[in-house]
Structures are given as structure tokens and as C-alpha cells.
Amino acid sequence: MDWGNVTAEDLIDALREVDWSSPPRPISEFFSRFTIPRSSAKWNSRLKCNLYYYRTNYFIMIVFILALGFLRRPLAIVAAFLTALSIAFLNDSFAGTFSEKVTRTVRQFSPHMAAKMRPPLTPVIRGRPSAKRAIYICGRPRWVFVLVFSSVSFLFWFISCGLLTVLWSLSFGLLATLLHASFRTPNLKARLNTFREEFRAVWRNYSEL
Image (cartoon, rainbow, N blue to C red; front, side, top):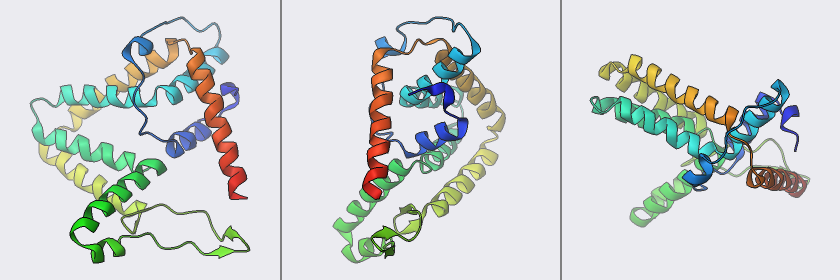
């Protein structure tokens, strides 16, 4: 897969659809080998490849940096958690897993309420879905959860007065991610993982036909 031909929009779509439940890469691999890219094209390809391959590591690193910045602001930690959760809801795999686990937990106490949390059925015309599959969380459209959690997190940010802190911490976390993705040399595992994900995407599209 030529990462140089992958646009930023394609990368965002891939990060939105990919499974984020996979464990992070080992620390020894994450800080293994660093080299300076020889050209802007090499840097562009390396940046996209590492952002996709080490996505879980970067997410944990940013959350850790944010947590360090909020040690004296407990309310800001709650706001950061809600913000991260609202962003995680944008990922299809996380949204589906979250909805399934919540529904399964509710079913143990109230099967009737759990039945109402099922997503509506997508109408099928001539063996194919009539429209693009919408993502539901606990029986509600995904944007409802994103809007609610984002609004609550913004309220906590306002009360804790931690907006300036989060801006500095987030900027430092994004800068660290950019530097690592720029200078970390993609290894054979990253390339094989790229081909495997590309095959899964092709197979998924073939199965939907």
C-alpha cells in the first residue's frame, strides 16, 4: 500500500472504521529505531503509516500527557475523559462495542429496557441495504451521544477553568505524536499490518455486494 497516495480524508476514514480495541505496540518497538526521512514524499508516507500503525500508542500517550497536566484539577480530568469518550464514539468499532456491552449489562437487570436499546433494522432492497448503514448506540443515533458527552465535557471544562491547560497539554501531546511519527522508521510489522488491513477492507466491500 502506497501511503503517499493516501489522502488525509482517507486516513481519517480508516482511523474511524478500524478496530481500536487492539493492545498498544510494545514500548521496545515503539522507541526502537529513528531516522530522518530523505524527502518530503518519504516523510509524508512515513507519517501516515505510523499514525495508522501506532494509533493506540499515540492515543494513550496524549491521554497520559493530559492527565499529567490535570493532576491539580480533578474536575478537568473528568472533562478530559468525557471529551475522549465523545471522540471515541466517532469510531464505528468502539461505538458498536460500547453499545453491545451496555445493552448486555442492562439486560441482566431489565430485559424489557434492553430490548428498547436495540438498533432499528435497516431496510433491504433487492438484497442490498437501501442506504449506508447508520451507527446506533443503545438504540439512539450516534450523534446524540457525541453531542451530549461533548456538551457535558464543555461544561466541566468551563467550571474547572482548565481550557488553557488542556490547550497546552494537547499541543504538547500532538507535537510529541508528530515528532515520533515523523522520525520512527516503519518496520516490517507495520507494512504487513497495512497489507492485512487493506485486504480486510477489500474483503468487507466484496462481502457487502
